[in-house]
Image (cartoon, rainbow, N blue to C red; front, side, top):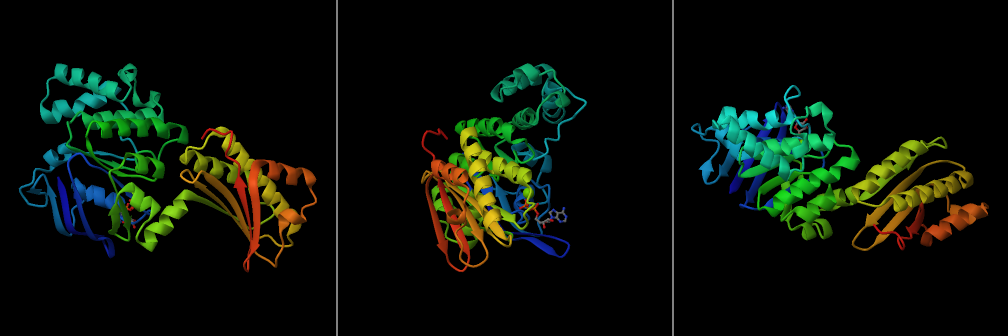
Length: 364
Ligand code: ADP
Ligand code: MG
């Protein structure tokens, strides 16, 4: 349905898309993942002609999109786009947000547009909000309205550019569910996302984009479990794992906990387990601060749903010293032991303590 060949795009002196090649078939769900600033948004924007590529080819339904004769508004109607920021008309009710484009651009009658809008709102679970204004809705609801608005134009493809990254973590799930349901209806979709579990779950294929190129494309299993390129491997591990530097005794415990919660929610970990992670983290850091002359440590949390394993790792500088063994705080030691299956220490130039957090009795 979409074929892209040697696509290039620069902004001034910056070559953003170096050489993008891709093929997308009808009914496929493609997730695009990769570091920020590597051209993912630019690629989507080129696809529906919000940006004009410098060179290369884009074919959509066997037509050359970059030809002078292309009807840009028709392309945008067939290739809907959902953005990070919902871009709703704040002065219009939800239903008017939905009907305005079909009436103006497709010449749909008011009554037909109204009927279709009600049906479409049903698909995103928001019929009862038809007469609300956008500012009466939560972020998740606004994004669902934006998806409904896009569906009103009967698109053949929907491009999503990080549809959940402006949302409060509690609202991510409702938007992802709507997208998942669309996938079940056979809608062709290209989704730029940081939600790795979602990408894995919903996609037929995953594109790993880096440095203005699609480095790898493959099944979710292949990309997430055995990426071929070092770049994809590094990126996927960084996203799966949480990192935090501790450079001072006055490290910000609240900020750390907030970041842990965000990370853990992204992995769909439950409340009990998140509390356990926070407790174990705080205790091991305290032991470290109590038993190290200097402060220079990296905290890492590595979760693998597949292996059913959660490791909290503290790497710290200095000569060999096992801060867990050194700790004379019996209560903290007991607590850490009760929350973990095992605690390993090794010294390989730097000190490293790995705590294997217990996952049993926690439904995650
Ligand atoms: P991603 O979506 O992967 O984070 P983008 O496609 O948004 O990446 O951006 C890639 C690069 O292009 C960035 O360095 C960004 O600053 C630059 N860029 C994007 N849009 C523009 C623009 N309209 N003008 C100038 N530079 C831009
Ligand atoms: Mg982007």
